[in-house]
Length: 229
Image 1 (spheres, rainbow, N blue to C red):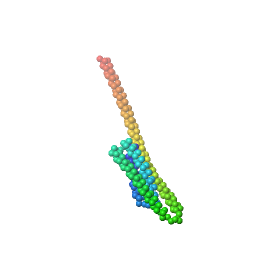
Image 2 (image 1 turned 45 degrees about the horizontal axis):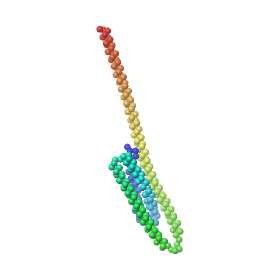
Image 3 (image 1 turned 30 degrees about the vertical axis):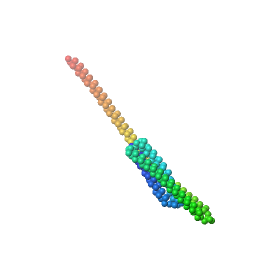
Image 4 (image 1 turned 90 degrees about the horizontal axis):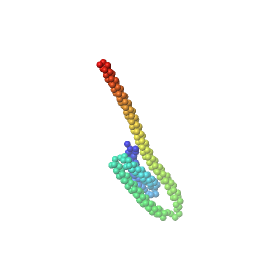
């Protein structure tokens, strides 16, 4: 039985797949929004934190794969499939990063063009201080929302780590139970061997005593024969 649960790879891999799928959903939603919309900013923060989390999860997944290869805890065919899955995830992560970067670059250029056009259309006597205050307030709200989303992602990661730790603890407990049962079995075998050894010793001693008695009887008979004759 392996020290690390065989399903730890499956748990980590499924978590990476779910996060990758969620990032693709966020990217598609983001492309349909105005770069100045609050939801666009929220999705941008979610994608950024999600990419960082996915990269961390994939590093841990690589550690699990390397350990499985080193200790040969799974068949070679399964290890080969895991290598293929990890390479595919790496490629997909790179594609998501490129898509996110290209989309952000395009939206920034579009927003800059729109902003320039709006500045030209601004009335000569109109002040932008009110707009600046509202923008700062909106950015503060968006930052708080991004932090909340980051905390949710961190909480999910800690939950997965706690689940793995629980599985590892159960595995160690099973190993201890197996060792205890083995020690008890060895004690019973040793007791049986000692008992059988004592029985054999007693039989040997009995056999030796009977030999002496036979010699004595033979000598007694010989004496009687000599005396009589």
